[in-house]
Structures are given as C-alpha cells and as structure tokens.
Image (cartoon, rainbow over all chains, first blue to last red; front, side):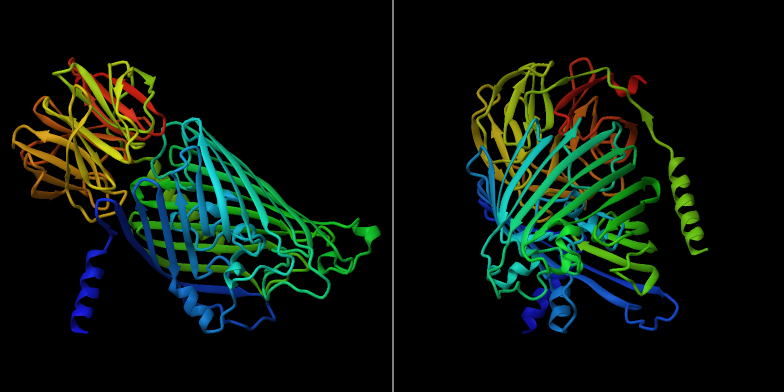
Amino acid sequence: MKNYILALASLATATSFAQLTLSNGHHVLELTGEVSAYYNYRELKSGEFDHKKDRFKLRDAQIELEGRVGGDWNYELQVDFADMAAQNNGEEFDPENPGLMEARIKYKGLRFMDVEVGYGKLYYSRASLVPFDYSAFWQRAELVRGSIFSQRDVGITVMKNFWKQRANIYLGAYTGLGEKSLGGDNDPSGNPEFIGRVDVSYPARARFRDIDDRHSPIPLFALGVNGRFMNKKLPDGEVFPTDAYGEYGWKVVDGKRYVYGFDASFMYMGFSGSFEMHQIKAQPQHADDPLFLNTTPDQNHGYVLMGGYVAQLNYFVKSARTILSARYEELDLNDLNPGNSQRISGAIAYQIQGYNAMVKLQYFNIIKEESIDPLKWENQLRLGIQFQFK
Amino acid sequence: MRLFFFATALSVCAVSGLFAQKPTQLKPVSFVSLNVPEPSDICYSAVTKSYFIASDSGYLSETDRDGKVLQQTPLMVSDFEAVATDGEFVYAIDETRRDVYFFNPKTLAIERVVNVPFSGGRNKGYEAMVYNKVKNCWILITEREPVILFEADKEFRITNKVDLSKIATDISAATWYNDAIWLMSDMDMILFKINPKTYAVEGKWYLPVLNPEGITFDENGNLLVTCDDMQRLYYFENPEKK
C-alpha cells in the first residue's frame, strides 16, 4: 500500500505541466488530464427563489490516454470522473459533460483515407469541434452544446484531406441517439443517423481553434458546410430511450429529421472570429407529436423548423497572456411558436501557464427568451480555474 | 452597470496589449512553394552543396536552393521535426518516437537509428537539433512545456540540460552560423541568436511568416525558413545586416 501511494505521488509530481509519454519503439502512449472548478452566481428574476445554481462546482476531472501503434493505428480514451460522479449522485444528464468523452480508434493503413470507429465527437459544427480547453468560456453556446443536436455518438467515420490539408471531408454513420447511445441498444426504429461535413481553409490549413494565439501575420479563413439526417419512425407503441429527446425535444424525432448548417471563421494578428448557423427540419410521423405544439396539419404542413446562429469575436492579448471573447446567439426553438431568444456572453481568461493553467471568467446575459423556454435567471457569472497536465 | 465594468476591463486589457513592443522585423525577400509535405526543418550541407528538408509526413528530401527535390526517401512511419548534418551523416529526429536517424547523405539510406528517451508530451518532444562547435556536443531541444536544451555526445547520450522555457513559448528549429546558435520560435515567430557557451540570448528578430518550423543559412549568409502550414520556403537577407 505504501509503495502504491509513493508511486501515485511520484506520478502526480512528474505530470505537473507536462504529460507523460511512454514508448516501446513501436507503441507510443501519452497520458494527460485536466481538473477544473468554478464558482457560479446567478441573478434570479424577481419572484424566483431557487439559488441552487449559486455554488462551487467541479467541472472536470479528466484522464486521457492517447496512443499510436506503428504507423497505422491511433487510439484515444478520455474519461471525466466529475461527470460520472455527478450522474451517480442523481444529477441531471448534461450532454456537454457526458462522462465518457472519447473511446475511439483510427486506422490510417488504407492510405487513401482514414477510418475512425468508436464513440466520440461528431464531425458536425465547428464550434462543437473546438476543444473546450482552448476557449475562454466555461460553456459553449446553447445551440452547439449538445442539448439541441448531439455532439457525440457511436459509429464509424471515414475522412480524407486534400490540397495540402486545406480541404477535409468527413462522412459517417452513427446510432443517432447521441450521448445516450452509451446505453447500449438503439431505439426501436433501429435506424442510424448519417452525417457529412466538408471544410476548406485558405491560405493555410486550419485547425479547430478559436483563439489566434500566434498572432497570424497573414489573414486565415475557413469555411465549412455540414448536414445530418435520420429517419427514426418508431413502430406503434414504442418510445425512445429516456432522455434521448434532449432538453428541447429535438435530438431525436419520431419521423424524419434533417439538420444542416455552415460555419465561417478567420484569424489575423490576434483577432479571431466565427459565425455558425444551423437549421433543423423535422417531419414527425404523428400529427399529435409535441413538436407540432398542438397545431393542425393545415397549419404546420407536416413539418416544423428550429434554427439559430452564433457569432463570436476574440482577441488574444499576447503580452498580457489574456484572451478576450464575446459571443452573441439567437435561437428560434420552434417556428410554430412566435418569437425567438437572444443571449450574449463575454469571457476573459488569464493564462498563468498557457492553456494548461488558466483563470477564466464568463458572464452570461439573457436579452430575450422564448415563451416555450422560460428561464429563472437574467444574468450569470462564472469564475474558476482550469489546470491541464498536458 | 455590471456590464459596463466588464466592458471596461476588456478594453483596458486589449489596449495594454496593442501597444506591446516587438523586436526588429525581417521581411522575406521571396518564397517558393515546396513539393515536400509539411516541411518541418531544413539544413544546408557544405559538402553536397544542397539542402535537406525533414517532413512531419515522414519524408527526408534533398533539394537545391530553389526547393527542387533532388532525391527523397520513401514514405516512412515517422514524424520528423528536426534535421542537421555534419557532412558524414544527415540526422533527423522522429519527435513522437524520440529516434535519431542517421542517413547516408548521398543515398539517403538509413545507416543507424538511436533512441533518445524523453517522457514529455508525445507532440512536444525534440523539435530542434544542432551541433555546438564550441562545446563539441549535439544539442537537442524539446518543443514546449517545457523548452529544454539537452547537450548530448556523438552517440546522442545526454550529458547536460538547460531550461530555456523563459526565452520563448516554443522552439521549433535550430542551426549553426557565424559561431553562434540560432533558434526559431514558431508560436512567437521570433528568431534568436544564442551564445553557444552560455546559451544567453544575444539578439532577436521578428519573422512575419506563418508557422516557421525550420531555419538554415546558405553559403552567402542568407536565412532560409521553411513554413509547415503554408508548405513554403522563405528567403531572408542575413538578419545582422539590418
């Protein structure tokens, strides 16, 4: 036991600000991880008294194993113990923090394309694909954080890059149940979801990053289009697994669902920005589907839309090691219900040690809300620290 | 009101950064596009009068000054990040596996492979190498977090280490010229002239090119820089002429 504790202590010391890499000459394994925690304060609307969100929270307690075997195989396993502990204690499932984050293998041996199999981030939505640790924010925009369409799923993706890695194409098939796919079974329809994405950047290849931390001396641009489709008509009397619908009821649809969107981004001299827009078209098979909001087929024509966009601007103050970010988001959760919601958010992150140790402050403000999604609060502040041993 | 304070704080931080000073800026004289994917480092051989370019994609290429490929290794399972030559061999480091390859400079055949263990990040391993002619040792430098300069003997056995993390966010390349070590920082886009005895910084210049990963000097003292993301070779006048 004593030796075990000593071994753990020496591992903890060795991993301070530097991950560990082990190699036998053929297999290279890297160990990394992250711990982050914050304090959250909500300014409630008058008449609201539930202050349970005013609290300290352990956001991340992650371990990641990433490896390469020979030249053909890559793998990644990433687990967040904070999410698992929260779910074990009866907390509501948060799709942005699902517990198991990545469990996938990539085969590169075909040469003309790579094949990825397993559970992990879906190649849909640039904002979803930017690693969270490289952002000043504590939370992604509502549109892309997994509550409207899934961020992760189990399935297979084939991918290929062209034109000096400036163009990429991703095509895949997945269960369509998103983060709930970890339950094991598919839904009673048994049908998958298909996703495709194409992105192009110029004049250099682009990575999924929000911040221009190099202060690029030339302007860099990237454009992406993506779409996804599922046809999950349930047999009579069958239902989707619990919570599969997601917070707003759009993650799975008893019928056909199309999601399509585009994104554009730039970086130049420390400034960076992105714009991303998505729309969902659902064709539920039953006229009394909750998405129709009790409208008649004459009113809804058999389909219903939701959509929104996110615009974000950032500046990296290199000399002050500080990231400044501001974000505006607009959502229309259901076109059969009049009105939309608008949110803004600002964030500052001070880099004590690059992205590995950052103090982050995020401010949230609800400018306007939809009648079908009333909120208890108007403003929110979140202050905390992220520490990665990477 | 809260929003006002938030906006004010953002503005103060931004303005303080906009007026930060930069070292003397060098302007590229010209550039060529390379037929070497992901060029990560370059060195000049006075013996063959040619250049050797290492590639992240697993190639070692011999080129002329215009970047024309004269010969190239077959695709290898390697992530070459640094290249250097002493005339006898061309040496290239596989950053991921921490292997130093000894290539025959005439045929580009592999003569030997030596492993130099380093347990830091898989993609933050040895990124630069150069022979220190003053201390008669090899120098291997890790990319970042931390930036460590290791001295090694001719068999690449580590004999000393120096932490250079304070001089730059990262180090992406090293070369020898005019009795000094020259280092390149990719993330800061800064070229450093380093004292080979003390490793103190003696000069620095700002290079406005994206992702500069390799540096060398030609026979006339001009600076050549390879850029990975742009797949280009840039030409600069000698920095000390400025």
